[in-house]
Length: 453
Ligand code: NAD
Image (cartoon, rainbow, N blue to C red; front, side, top):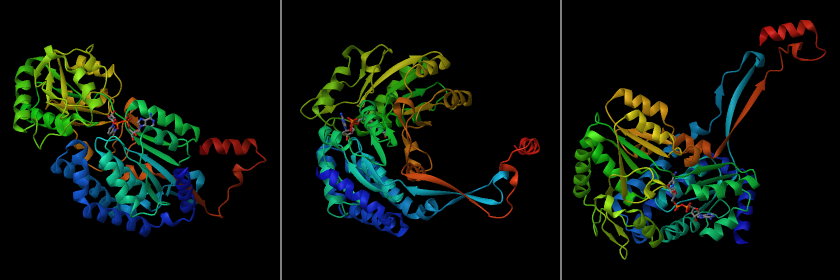
């Protein structure tokens, strides 16, 4: 199998130690940067063909994100890679303790289709920065972007260092049989389990970036205008096909009517309608039909118009929803926002707690007690107070899930560490050797040890 040969060639290349040089890593990060800039228009065209994503959204949520990652690592590579001094405890004195970040070897990145550039290239960039070889398998569902990335990289990088492997389920099943030193997977919880099982065969460590049902909670103490604008943006960006989009809205009963009107206003103001350049289409028929089934006509508060030929689903708000409805049973991953109202904030928080830990959670309030309960009581991958999605834009915050929304994290330093082994070394002086730890043991030595410990 050709891919088996390429993985073996990456193993052989890694053994030459060349990827460990900071200059080598920087050279290829810069190369990737220039390639992205030089082929910007090709990348825009490919994603537009895949699901009509606008140039503006592609720049802000994909390319500028990836370019920023490259710049971050180029700037910080030296300090991230250098041995980290830590203090040495009494029993190990005289001595020095250091942690050496080292690359893992030959790594595999499997991407999802919804932010095809960001979710494929961002982990790849972290793998390069940490000094690894890497096979990137983007999602075949966004076939044009997969092709664009494979041409960009395979024509310009040596395959025994970095290689883009094109393929769908069959090819991914095959490649997962091979041994890697790390697998970084972004996608659904269902496929995450398949990847985790395959990795276990080789004891390969994994990062699993999965999904889930992420709540947005709005209380009467929120700045409602700000909350409405930020929720509409976070929910309907990319037509709701965002892993950290608010999946559903939990709203205090007394403000529900007023707030839903504000949501309607912002959907219209943002020009999210059929044929609008601002609004992305659904990726394919399969997802379109899945989403169509979730729109319960009698619960529509706003929207509900669809066009299968154009893969268009209007931003849709459903009210009078309860936890038993089919829309509340799975991650929506589309432009439908179910609304559940509450009278008691603490009970609302408890209902979220009864479900799987989500990838994200958002609270809109200016009440410090409510903020405290949200932060301390709920477990979720990451989130915001008084915003949606923007926590991903701060490279100092780790991004990843917990429980069924994933394991491990990346971005900034965390991405570097996801692709590194932190190797601790204790270097002892050869003088000042106390005989107390060596046999033959005695009562006297024991009483000294007790005191020391
Ligand atoms: P998916 O799990 O269907 O596919 C992801 C990748 O796995 C693709 O590259 C695909 O080729 C491969 N794959 C699919 N089925 C496979 C199988 N049976 N065996 C081996 N490989 C297989 O996910 P998707 O539809 O691309 O993305 C949507 C999901 O991803 C949502 O659940 C979303 O929340 C999640 N997601 C998470 C993040 C994150 O950062 N946590 C980001 C984006 C999307």
